[in-house]
Amino acid sequence: MRIRPVGAHALLLDCTAPADVPEDDVPEADLVEAWRAELWRRREQGDLTTVDIVPAASTILLDGLPDPAATTEDLSRWAPTVTATARTASQAGGSYGTQVVVPVHFDGPDLPAVADHWGVDVPAVLRRLTGTRFRVAFCGFAPGFPYLTGLPAELALPRLATPRPRVPAGSVALAGPYAGIYPSASPGGWLLVGRTDLVLFDVHAEPPARLAPGTDVRMEAA
Image 1 (cartoon, rainbow, N blue to C red):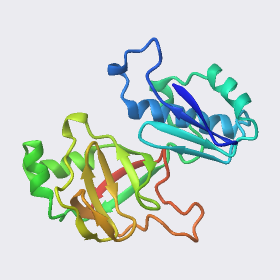
Image 2: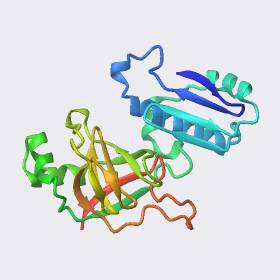
Image 3: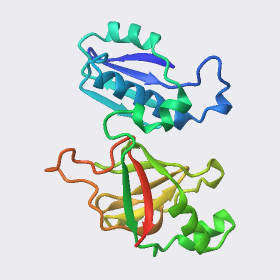
Image 4: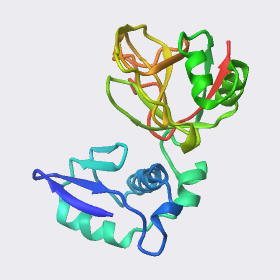
């Protein structure tokens, strides 16, 4: 893991495989989640003082650090166990380990395309999606938009060649290795497989994002 200063009070953690673990054996998403969970736990027990812990696809931003140099030294001594930390809910703290069931109407226009890419029929796609334990790796693109990991790497899907000018709020979609849910109407190039009535982002709620990083998600046919 490389640690880079960002301004006067932030650090960017660029996650890579531990020196004694071959990179091919540790998915990047698991490394990011392991560090996110460890940092969340450290903050909960008072070992880490920071305003925000912001995971992304391959990095984690620690913002609002009173002493970035001291935190850098602490980070060099912390070594999360990828398997145990990333998969054991009791170690994570915060929202990690909670499960949100998302009721989905599987009537998306791109279901046949997904089935074709995966070499199965549409019912098999639904069985795969409802049988997968997803986890929110990070949020991005739009407020409250969750990037969900859990699908095998070989099922990664291409985005649409031409994005749709408007994707309805609540649309459940797939792209690359991720599943996602559009919290509000917006343009988008992901493959649409269904829709949910679950409200994902409410500026008046605490927290505003319904599906925060670390949250387990299970899709259920509505």
